[in-house]
Image (cartoon, rainbow, N blue to C red; front, side, top):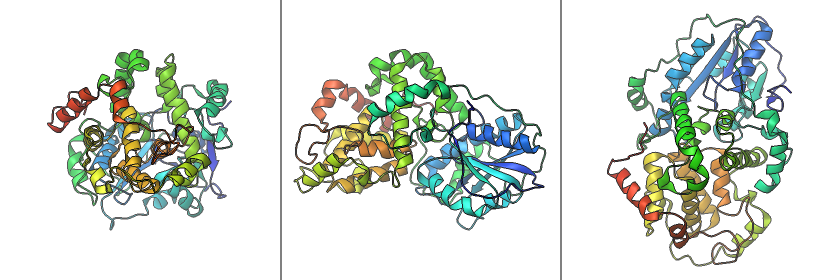
Length: 461
């Protein structure tokens, strides 16, 4: 079976341009030169046409919540991306749109000399919107290739009810897709000139480059996550060597630091899920999270017209939340209070401080964080809006199928009914006493206080 099976969608009916200079790969989500099926598909098409490949990557000032944190993470990957593509004989144009007066038609300019355009298939945020809007206007074949999942979502023709329905289907086909992605050598290496709008990025220039952009400068870079392929490879190597053997026993204890911390790198496409899964073979608990749970989120986003809508909840969850919508809340906080970690709950505030400083909350504690937003919001819809806002603005693993799916999990998605109680109805509930029974809350509070004092012992920037 071809490595591209069930991964390729042609989104328009245009013909290949004859006399073109190259095949263009618009790198939107999978920002890597290795183990990238969209890139390899572009090379394959270029070889058939005896053309070189030009890779186009951009960072725009106008995406929602554009800020120093997200921009910096993008920019930190550019130098290594440039080096690795050049080593493979592939062209690379990086365009930084610094302000809203800067040109916004660079993709179409580059497509004007392309035989066809290949891009990433991705079911949420701006990529989903851009693929819908660009396809009818690009003038050449516009082909979206899925390279974010181990098993492409198109394999499953419907939305799954939960992990228990998806898991056996995934395992039946996993061996067909869990294979290394080997680079395809280009028949014609790139030898062209780069356009005047290409932006060179040197590591030492990144703070100044971000400062020059018309974006939100109130959200600083993460104190511990550095963007790019090299950082992703380093995280994976550290996880396999030091954490994988204890992942099953320690993964829910934040201060054990037994998780991979790869979610920002998977989201930004610095590393592929296939690479991570192959490196972690023999660790079923980790593969359950990486493949079953993560790809359940992609399945949800793939089939949901609006992935973060409360209308995606199962009937029982919507009914029980509606029944208890007018229940009195012991505490009600505004979005601003949530955002600034200003609640009565010391553990919740610490979780939010971790988001503000690191750009990521430990997965188990993020469940508690979300459940309490549901409990302390005026209604479920407002709770969802608050969680989406905070993730989109601060989380390096936000704006992702996992983000929206896990937010809705806090309200019953992919879960079952539990004992009925105020506010939640039959939706699963979490409380501080349970967190103290299961984890070392005091150690976590001490660690977050050390973060706030600038003494993060686990920073890896």
